[in-house]
Image (cartoon, rainbow, N blue to C red):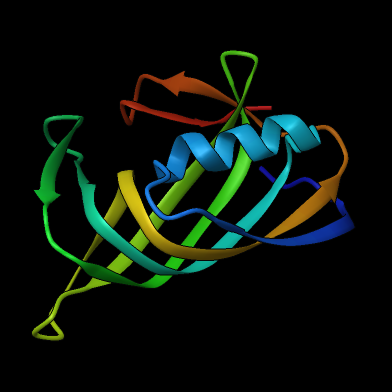
Length: 140
């Protein structure tokens, strides 16, 4: 499936220390009425919940990391799911010993976070449940 979009705008911003990263970003997207786009970011969190999707069980295996972590890379896209704006985010996080953990980002408490949002012009993709994979994928 392929759709062509035009780039409409680019925003840069930051979140406050203590913000819950995903709800805070979602609130910004809703306020700005951004339903199609891409997100990148860097910074740090004081804890995070990450997931690995197991294709055999069709479920996420999650880990909670309760320590200070650098956001080496955060990347995601913006579409809609259940008629709501939905940011889908993945992150690579580094620990004090320079080892890294990464995966689907379910939660993170911001220590510092700076981001860019590329807004796309056009009708956003809509996520719908895909029986074959067990995931909510872009369907239209």
